Image (spheres, rainbow, N blue to C red):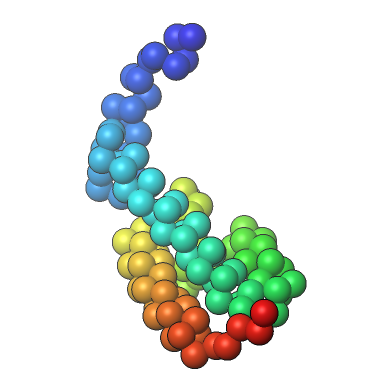
Length: 112
């Protein structure tokens, strides 16, 4: 129970130039953007091919683990690879994929 109530580790937590609680907030925002980007990629691809909509985001996660390509937007989801450029790239990629999703959703015809 002491592990749940002892927050002394929070004072030493550092992410980029943030310390403590703001660092946790930045980490939460980064993780939210990464998961949201994976979901947007999945739904965009699922409109055209449902099995590929599952396989491509899954393979992107695996590729992110084993490669250190610096322009991978999912690099900021790994704590050792977080920097300002990766966060900006994740944000820009998420915004671009939202635009692509809205365009494909508007002009695709669903056959029910």
